Length: 245
Image (cartoon, rainbow, N blue to C red):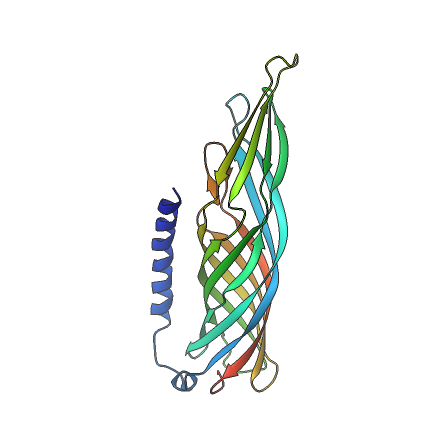
């Protein structure tokens, strides 16, 4: 199932990347001719929302729970001028994602306990940024892009199903372990400010919305819906080569 999900994700995101690169075509700027680019570090905070569900005790409507978690991330950032007012950014980073822990009692004499530890991941987003104003110390920007990623740790969810009766004669416990999808893809949107702090130094402050294209886990025992998150990130960049206009 993981291979099928990632294959569909890969084809979708490849189409998005091709469209981004086609839109970036045109006459190169002087900065591009000089092979200028910026590089630096980034860090930030992510707020992620998760919704996961499981079958109810009588086989009817599923129970569900919603968790919101806050995690940090840190990484590198590179951006390159494509044409006047358009930059292409690569920003590989490391972080942790949501940690759902829930115990729910359902009708029909069934209780589920769901546990999953911190998931370390590496994400590699590619973002096309448009700066509508050509010059200035503080330049607003908007951007869109895609992200590929790899979940590294805690790649399974533990589920315990406890069935009980009032007399205690037919109580039973079953434990299950379900694997997460290790690979993921996502689409993203971002807006923020590109601030020229000094001649060769810039500060980037952005707010990003990311929605993944496949669920972390999809199984008859547990459906973990497509993750989504908001991020605030701060980046410090140094300009190599001629200045980026």
